[in-house]
Amino acid sequence: MKWSQHIIICLIQLVCWTSYNYPVNSLENGLLRQPPMGWLTWQRFRCVTDCQENPDTCISEKLIRTQAQLLVSGGYLAAGYEYIIIDDCWLNKTRAADGSLQPDNQRFPSGIRALSDYVHSLGLKFGIYEDYGTETCAGYPGVLGHLEQDAQTFASWKVDYLKLDGCNADIKDYDTGYPAMENALNATGFPIAYSCSWPAYQEYAKMKPNYSAIAQTCNLWRNWGDIDDSWDSVYSIVQWFGDNQDRLAPFHGPGHWNDPDMIVVGNYGLSPSQSRAQMALWSIMAAPLILSVDLRTISDWARDIILNKNLIAINQDPLGAMGRRILKLDGHVEVWSKSLQNDRTAFVALFPEPYGTPIRMSISLTDLGLGRFDEYDIFETFHGDFLGKYHKSDRYNFTINPSGDVHAFYVESALIKSL
Ligand SMILES: *[C@@H]1O[C@H](CO)[C@@H](O)[C@H](O)[C@H]1NC(C)=O
Ligand SMILES: *[C@@H]1O[C@H](CO)[C@@H](O)[C@H](O)[C@H]1NC(C)=O
Ligand SMILES: *[C@@H]1O[C@H](CO)[C@@H](O)[C@H](O)[C@H]1NC(C)=O
Ligand SMILES: *[C@@H]1O[C@H](CO)[C@@H](O)[C@H](O)[C@H]1NC(C)=O
Image (cartoon, protein in one colour):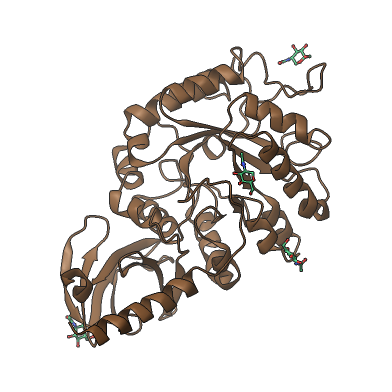
């Protein structure tokens, strides 16, 4: 190849690099350079607190220890799922005499520090939930009025990740309250990844969240409603992210992530194809991959989807670009795309609605945004199978099933590969 061609390619790469890495002033605590991966109690175990009636599913140290062991023995930690996070309903309803937070002593008899030490001994990281307001969403004590004290408590428990919800507070106070909690966390000197619900409440209240301020404060933030265990819920979140991607994507990147909420794969609501779809779409969005599933009873097929190496690699790509919806075709199929390092691009074609029969799609490489190079190799994502060599003037044809299935593929330029 001639030098002039090299220079042109370098210039193109530089322009693309800078446009995908919009200069955002962001929180620099060194954490979450890639989207966090882990497991959280909420979607699957909610606020079950009666351990007499529900000894195996109540929010307790026993549940956390059991699921932590399975994260390791089931291969999830090896695949990258490293955080285990307790959501709401772990607290005692009253603070201790000195004003500090304390767990429910029936369900967490060993205390949080001992549980955190146990989790760390397995090679996992430990996360916990609190709320910015006077009370958590389930009515336990919130941090308001105790920010510094609670931050110190979390640091003394070696909490690696704090999810701070926004119930029972004045939404307007978030713009000062969430940064105040970040200052308190920072002042402990202990690195704590900070997950904020700040914009989710503001978006719901039709306020315009200041994503610039949010990215300077939080490592990740929930943007929109809570996910539920159904395809309707998953797809409504996907639609919202697609509709708002131009506002969100510039603030997404290493250390600061938009969060469409948990992976619900392995529970009751999604079919196998809808489960593939959620995992593929969350990978394309470079979303946090936070599972909420009972690892004692998860099916083999759901586990295989969650552990798919190619999807995880796309999600964890070091560029940290948030994928975008680039096409809507025939009123049915939409195509999402995410730029990866080394001039690769990942795509997901999604057929969200019930329809009855698979349909054949034909998309020009130009419409996929491919055209900088003459030749491309296309691979199926789930299995990594080589699907063929394509010229930039070709069309890519595939079949896609309805009712929430995806065709996931990734593309690399034949030219770059030969360099
Ligand atoms: C909650 O804390 C109070 C006061 O510290 C204590 O008396 C009570 O036993 C605790 N209850 C639970 C369920 O932890
Ligand atoms: C506190 O903030 C400073 C400045 O952004 C940063 O360099 C440091 O890593 C932070 N420390 C912790 C523990 O988060
Ligand atoms: C948003 O936050 C940034 C950073 O804190 C600040 O400079 C800017 O003025 C804020 N924008 C608005 C509209 O409040
Ligand atoms: C894709 O389908 C179009 C017709 O829709 C056809 O002209 C083209 O040859 C097909 N491409 C490949 C690579 O099979």
